[in-house]
Length: 393
Image (cartoon, rainbow, N blue to C red):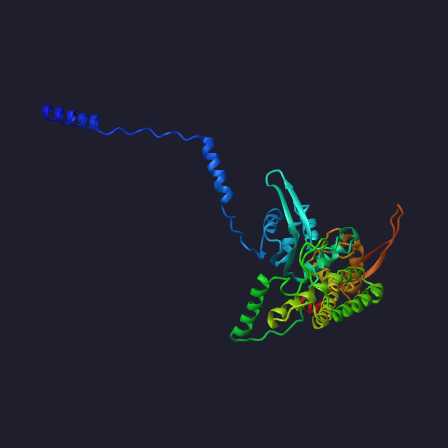
């Protein structure tokens, strides 16, 4: 066994000795490598850019990066707008609201500078927001902006406010209209890649960094007449300051609607040019329609205290208030729609009219002071909750 092992060891040694020698790899010159990489980078094609149309959830920092490569703008699509609006109030997001307010104009550049992200230049800050909101949440926002200090014009920028009518539910079982869907999708496809100048827009110039459309002479006359009536009659006669502020934004709404309607016609008919008289007439009708819905939305705030009375009635049924309570007792709880003295008084007037409560004066104590008005609760309410709940419904 020893001789055989010695032979094997000697054979391995000979094989290693006779094996071809491998040359050591040469270490490349780092400067030459750097020059080759630089040359390749110069000749490299631009990185592909993802065309974006919407985002459901984003920070303003990331939104700035997306807008940098999408100068046509972006839509923020939210099922519930409350989440987005609430995020603007969080600590560390104080600048978000200002960013979105400036993005509403849609025609200016924007620079952001951050230590970690560096500098980002947005050639065209243009953002649209679309979503839904519950009436109670909308009422809370209206109550907030009713305070002049909290009214920065955010809600007035939601120009397509629509408060739909209530419809009785009914069962429907029908197939989608595929032809109608295909026609709409075809319009979207054409508008996504159309050339504005080829479709009748004036080219960009020293005053306009993007191609732009003009009204036809007939459409211009319609716009002038409409704008004159808006600013000389409708707004000066408006008693609700919130609605008046909302209407002042219609100077942008009318041309925007007219242009959208005109471009849809261009995509369908293939007839290009200036914004037509027909598009302007439709824009007038749309503004009237949207004004009626805006008044309905702002009317949630001016309900004479009825919604506040409903909420106060709920608190009484729940036993949150006892006989002899005062308006101050109600307000200090900070209940929804009962946060101001005026709202509490309106609610109490409703409840007193409906015989839920009765007011009486409480004389000042031995130390003096002004007399106080207190309220006693109808003793029948706790025993007949359902009946009285229907009374206030």
